[in-house]
Image (cartoon, rainbow, N blue to C red; front, side):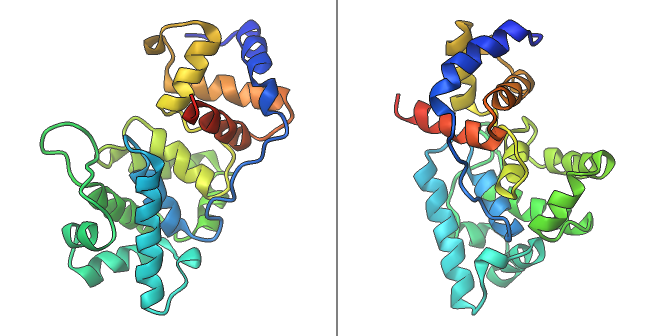
Amino acid sequence: MSLSPQQVRVVAERCEQFRGSKAPDGYPNSLALCIVDSVQSTMVRYPTVEKVVKNYRAYRREHGADPNADSAADLAATFAQLGGHEAWAKRIGNGNRTSTHRGAPLKAYAIEVEAKNMIDLGVLNAEDLRIAAEDPDALAKVKKAWLKVPGQGPGVTWHYVQMLAGIPGIKPDRMIARFVANALDRPLKTVGAAFCVGLLTAVAEELSMTASALDHAIWNYQRGQ
């Protein structure tokens, strides 16, 4: 579906109620938490994600570290300490998998691979990711590696990990897609991820707010429906 000025206007009118909303801080100093939260966030209720983040923080503090300043290397090290992704899932994560497909790996596996990929690309902390976002070629390399990991191909977690690191954006998950579909009175299946991102980014500019702030406001609104 192509984007039209009329669609921007219609959705902007629906989003007027969100003007002035602010986005959560995310994890501007912890790429580790950005990775954990983003990968865990799909196909679940958010309290499930919060529990894993809480467990990770507790584990790191038990070892005298500050999880709010953890790098990708720090995250990868926790898997080595615990003996692999299955043990990590039991101690910190959960049994949730990357997709509903039979044999899909645990999300813990995806988290470990994403951390290692970031290390290989020299993206060790959240600041490195923000710097990469300013260089289209550098960001494309990180994106390519991220999307190759099981369950991350749709791109929802890719958008989200950037947002959690402080890069404004839209996480085109089912909450966002439903809002857009309802606002435009269109079938949900006709509203794709790229369309949602483009449309809501334009709407955010129209409302003089960041894309991340609009995303969070819509997510909270949909959560209460």
